[in-house]
Structure formats: structure tokens, C-alpha cells
Amino acid sequence: MSSPSIQRWRSPLVWRFAQWVARGAVALVARLEVTGDVPAELRDGPLILAGNHIGPFDPIPIGAATGLLGVHPRIMATGGLFRAPVIGPLMRAAGHLRVNRTRVDPSEPAAGAAVDDALAALAAGSVVFAYPEGRITLDPHLWPERGKTGLARLALAADVPVIPVAQWGSHEVLPYAAPTGMWPAVWASMRHRRTIRIHFGAPVDLSGLVLGRPGDAMRATDRIIAAIRDNLVPLRADEPGAPRHTDPTRPADTTRTFR
Image 1: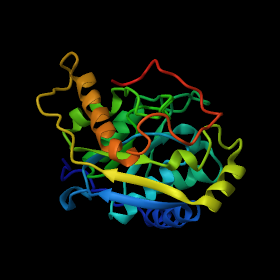
Image 2: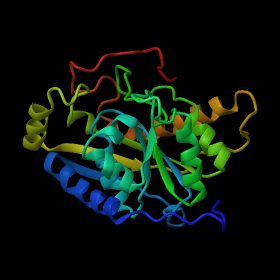
Image 3: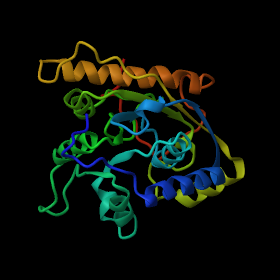
Image 4: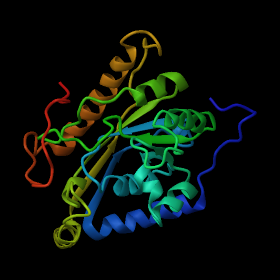
């Protein structure tokens, strides 16, 4: 995937340090269980990690879990984080990829530019992490919603493996409406230290699918979401229906329910 004319990307020290800090942050509020693995030959990329999005705390345990496996992904994150006074410079220094779903300043690149940035990152041998749903799930039972096709198009264009990353438990740490109600929730999490489970599955089979052929981007998206869902099932075996934890700040929306 990488080309001799493109300098291979190396994860900055600040990102590796942040992953170590994330392990400590998770340990304050939960017990982290990581299962599965990323094959040794894929850990340095190029590779796409596709995860389910169940709450605003998700990126912290993902950073901790990938660090434990020796993987340092460049995360495709909302542009709002890059505008924040302290977090923004850290996100840029760590090499993460900005997705401007809404533009505050007309000079900011449009959301489509993130695909080009991610393609360049993969061409440089990076691991890219993204949420194919494109938002925190609003499925009433917190199952993955039907995804947007952007990540699948990226995988087909770059011809790189996609590994599903299923997680469960992080939705209990912070409410959907965070920062509203954040501190009471953090305090409760510190007292109870529930378990956050993260599982890295086998690469998704995208064989037979071609970028540009009608319907293939959606078929690839559905295969990726199905793989995430299949790997999520055993993580929440005791909560197959409605989660025990209720969050009154989270709206429900069944229009994108994946079946």
C-alpha cells in the first residue's frame, strides 16, 4: 500500500503517551477487558479499525485497548474536537484526522476532505480508526445502526483490511448529553467501576466488492456493521435486549436500525 515516494507515518510520542494515560483514565472508572487481537503483520498498517459508537466516552477505552495491543491508530474524529483550545492542538499533534460534518468557518475543509486525508494516511502505512455509523447510536437497545458508506468506500479504494472492534460498557461512564451531567456520572463510575469490554475480531470479508459498482459500497458497509454486531453479541450476552443502564438524556431513533 505504501509508496516509496510517500514517507511512512510514525505515531508521535504524544499519541503513545496519550494511550498510556487513557489506560489510567479508564482504570479510574472501570475495569477494562480486551479480547481478540490485531495480527502482528497488520499492527503497523495499512489497516482500518471499525468500531461501534455507544457513548461519548468511547475513544478513551479504544485508545487504551489499542495501546495495549501495540497499535497506534489515527482516529477520524469530529471537527469540534479540533477546534477546542487544549484538545485541538493535541489531536493535531497526534496525527488524528478531522471530519467536519458541520463547518463553523467557511475556510474549513468540507467533510469529504476527510476521505482524502484518510486515503493519504493509509498510503503512508497508517492504521485508521473510524465509526462507520457516523454518530453515537440512537438504537433503543444500543445495537449498531446501519452505517454510512464513507468507511466502506475508503476500504475499497485503499484495498486494505478492515477489522471490526466491538465495545460494550463505556455507555455507562458518561451520559449521551455530556458534558451535561458528566461529573455525577463520573463519580458513580468511580464508585462502582463497571466493566468495559472490547473485542478485536477477524478481518471483514469484502471479497467480490468493487468501488464504483452500483450497490457495492452499501454491501460493504452492511458487511462491516454485521461483523461489528456479531462480535458485540458475546460482549453483552447478559443484555441481549434493552441495556440495564438507562440514560434519560439519550434520544431513541429506529430509522437507521440495522437488521
